[in-house]
Length: 415
Image 1 (cartoon, rainbow, N blue to C red):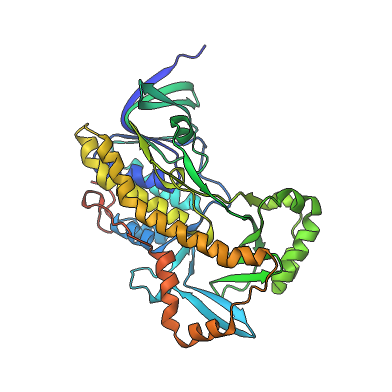
Image 2: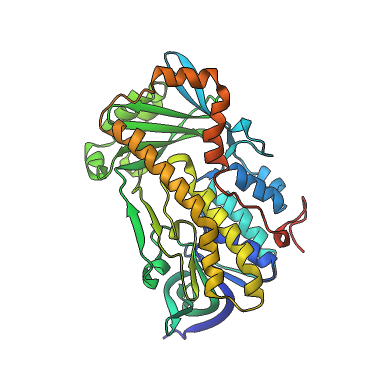
């Protein structure tokens, strides 16, 4: 029998997604001892959120990581347009934002996570444990005092003054801690897939609508990443119809991609996302804090989930670094993170739910999805209106800045 390994750290982070990596990097730059557990051996997951919003790009600037990020292969989405009657109307224009990088960068999430992991590992107090899955919480009475895990060398226990759950919408830590989320009804799901393309001249988000279905076409480096929206619970029926029928549906919505759609060979290439919108009433218990999707699952509309998770991490690091360094983390400190991030979470989810009711619901019910001509005319004549949705998506409510202790100048990412 393998001996149970036992270790100690100040802050244990469960999950190496954007929230976990940003939190680990920032706390390590403050000098906090951090151990991050990631169950996979690498970050190569397809169809993870690949949007990096303007405020996250600004954060990379503040952390001294912009030059390294800029060397990654990514495309820039600067506008979202709606084609009607042979005309293109811009309804989201990120270029109107007064920010250093007024666009959404579409970059493989594994590239971003590798960049953050490398920067964090340059800090002497940061430890990254890959192929290490958190399997349960350690407790001392009612207090969470760390994590049980299964690693490459067998089971172990990691004792920590604070455990932060960044393990997503299906959070093990949240469930084991008994923290309950309020679920909001969602009537649609998303199916992700890729189509090749050659023309790289137009980099904008292109929504396409049809009776009971819709597509959002996202330009990437050498291919389109496509989100197919359909009724919730339709995955089995969609797969039973088969890839040829699915390809015909896609071709009907994007006629210029008909040839590429015909090349779809298997429904295994179409990944189903069970869309959820929920929020914890309480984000912490004694010794445990949840952030990102573990605290609030977002709709994929606007791709804002990653941005909110990163902002949660920045706020948590800013609030918790000092008490962690003093080894005196309190319930009040943990509650302060929720207080800081609750307003942006509630506002964003409320807007998403309104859009679900006003746009997605009627669309999937078979109603004409074309925006009223009068509305399109107003947006066309008053182009500054396109800044409003751009601000909501690209900046959001209460954007966070890197704390002073984590900032580095260009090219200086350590010390």
